[in-house]
Amino acid sequence: MIGKVMDMLGDFFSDKRMEERISWFIIISVVAVITSFILYRADWMLGDNLHFVLYTGKGNVYPLFTPFKVGETRFFPFAWIDLNLLLLVPGGTSAFAHYMYAAFSFVVFCLFFLLSCKNICKDYRIRYGLYFAVVAFVLAVFNTGFFDCFLNLMYPDRYVVILFAAFAFLMLRYRECGKTYLLVLAFACAFFSTYCKETVFAFFVVYAVWTLFFQKECSRQEKIFMYSLIVNGVVFLLMYYLLAWRGHSVVYAKDAPMGILQLCSTVFRNSALLLFVFIFSIVRFFKCLVSKGKSLPVIDPLIAASAVYALEYFVLGYSSTYYYAPAVTAGAIPVVLYASRIVSEHRYAGTAILMLLLLVPVAHSASVSSCINNTVMERIKVMPGLRHMASLQRQGGKIYWFNPANDLDVTYSLVNTYINFRLNVQNCW
Image (cartoon, rainbow, N blue to C red; front, top):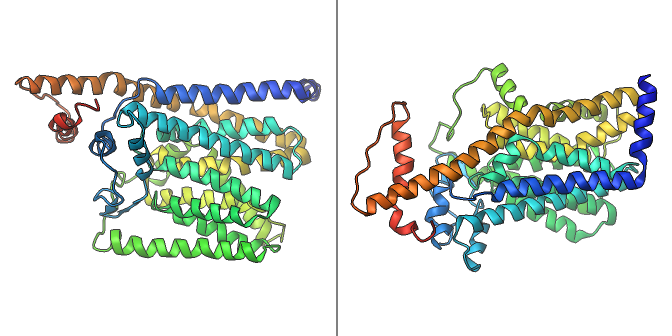
């Protein structure tokens, strides 16, 4: 009975025109919905967005070095400097312009991601290429960390997500045509993203080491490229130690200590695809190392690098979802590829794995909904309230604070900073 149902569904969905209609409808719908959320009532947010209000929000160039970006165990000097391009555009100092840029960067990510799917489907002769792209795309974007990165300006992980996708696409294209300029562009992506977030160096080092160790048909150009990635990681570590770590013993903004079970529960509840990333990366490692199986170029090093990137935050004890978004997006395509290959070799087992993968977005639905609701509430209530308070204070009014919670100092500090800069940022509000 189950076999007959599966055959009927297979016949229905295997029609080429039906595949195109369903696939493009889902992809375009997801892109449109997420873009609308990014732009809906776009406004400055409390917290780290203060830095945009004081720099690009006031028409000032965002500097390469600030105490927030370099020092006290932080070292990500390249984060946000591209927002200086908004200063060249009329109205670029507004919050809406900044979020238009975030929406544009989301579309750029989609382009690189879907082109990567197209390359993989061609290289591995995947029959239902558009369905492959849909599953991988939905798994990559429908998690809380991804929405955190694109609904808020403050997280440099957004740049990492985009540059990981661009890097994967360039490496896949290089495997196809062997053009040297693609390696140059891929190294540029690796170099820039390394200085956007402190943990990124490990991603490219692992990618390079895996390729050099397991990929036997590696060309001379590729070897030079891989060694360059390793050198880039070593140089970053040296600079990080000298400029940020030396003299400090406490990691910046480290979460409250969590037990390993609580940490795993929190992370996997919001980034369930990481379970598949870890499992498949371990399986592929043992197959390549012990069974002497052939490593899949780009795919195997990509999932291994994604697993190590996520593992870094497990070791550090971070549970916030946006930290894991780059690992989820970079690991989505390899996971779906492995699943599709299992389907072709073991129909029922592969179908079961695909069904589990399709349940991942369902598991994320509550946390994604909460993320969107919290963002919208802050945009439509908190910032208008701050502007109202700033207006009252300009007219000579007094503000009295009442907050029975223990975080009074933090709340007062964040809000008072906006009000104290009311004269400077009044025009951009």
